[in-house]
Amino acid sequence: MTLSESSDGASPKTIELIIYISSRLKDKPNFGSTLLGKSLCLIDSMNYLKTGKPITDLIYIKQERGPTPHPAQYLPIREKLVIAGDLKRVKADYFGRAQDKFIATREPDVEVFEKDEIFLINDILESISDHNAAEISDYTHNFISWIMANQKEELPFYTFLLTQAEPSPDDYEWANKVMGKYLSTKNAS
Image (cartoon, rainbow, N blue to C red; front, side, top):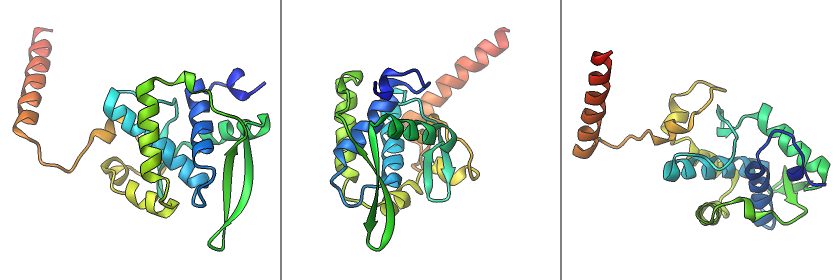
């Protein structure tokens, strides 16, 4: 029995995305535990930006090297995947540094994903697959949500909508409409 068939609290999409990433990036010398966590964060954030919801049920927090899945939630899932035999932990040398790699030992069940989710996952993995963990960590330091949060603070997905771009006239128009609706319902109460 694989972990995805058990009832450990993690959604099938969460489990299968971990397996999918570990399967797709297993041959990349730069792929280790950090890149796995960053991949999950980027995929969930981008899916939220596109659809209003993440793919997994993971929570992300601010860590020193960028946003990561919340360790209290994520690490037990990853460990259960290792115990179940769905992932194999491999120690590797990456430019003289020890690296933990998590390699999928089975094919992911892609049936749990929507077609658009698979396209997004593949696009993100393609764009980051040749970058090392430090480069991806540096990239995630540009997220305004990460910059503004306190260490170990949860990064709600709506905060990934924050930008440093100047608001456009359309943005102001939208804000005025929303505030008008809010004020009219508040005054009617």
